[in-house]
Length: 44
Image 1 (spheres, rainbow, N blue to C red):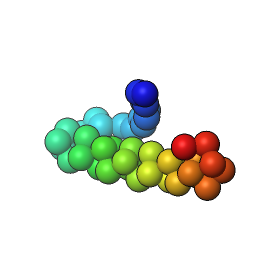
Image 2 (image 1 turned 90 degrees about the vertical axis):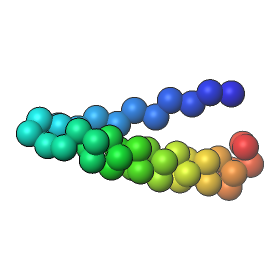
Image 3 (image 1 turned 90 degrees about the horizontal axis):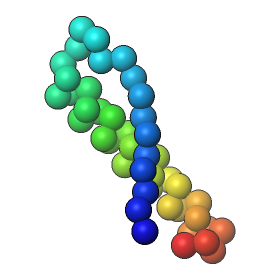
Image 4 (image 1 turned 30 degrees about the horizontal axis):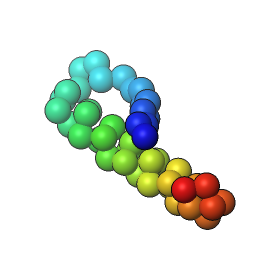
């Protein structure tokens, strides 16, 4: 099974490495919440 979590933001004028580090953290948090909801519903 594969999952894709899409997150967008404005990285203009900023530190690209930090931008992606923050986005990856947010994506991980959102995916964890999603999996928790699925588990609670018995779908996972």
